[in-house]
Length: 215
Ligand code: TZP
Ligand code: MG
Image 1 (cartoon, rainbow, N blue to C red):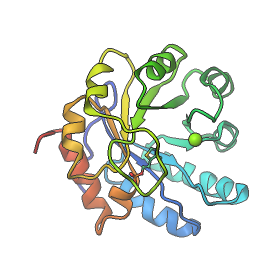
Image 2 (tube, rainbow, N blue to C red):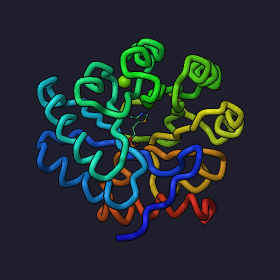
Image 3 (spheres, rainbow, N blue to C red):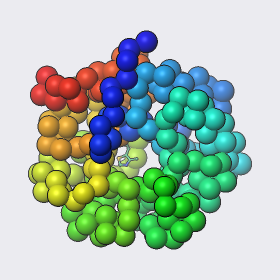
């Protein structure tokens, strides 16, 4: 096993996001080697599961993440994050507000906010107590229908926000270099890792870009 890239402050690395996977055993089997090989955090996201399956999958991921020391962040659902004891929640524009999530999950919780292509939304999110802000989509993606297109200029303009900045959307080992060089602290990836022929190799290649962004 390769030594994971050591996190710095603020954390830098790969923000792994689960693909829609209905088979829970298979989900765990796909995720585990990535947790073991340096994923910085894991977001549980499943847009096709029933509430019961999402509850079961989140509950199964929590001890796996804990065993690897990787924070689990639940997409969309503060109540589910609280129920399974996750490290935090990721909130889009329609998923409720940051202060309410903070009140429920506590001061140490990781609370992320989708900011799309908006510096103003990121400033408001940081002021409201977000733990990180996420910009995207940087590239076309088939994982989600996206309306906004973020740019490396937005990463440069958001340098003074004071919270980690996550880049998302169509990211792969081959295109994250300039995104990291422009200031992304974390690169959030679904298909660029999970759909790669060798997901662990793709993860390691993304992590390596933090040492050598332009390579
Ligand atoms: N939010 C903006 S783009 C996106 C999300 C959840 C999808 C990211 O998936 P991929 O496969 O890494 O492009
Ligand atoms: Mg959402």
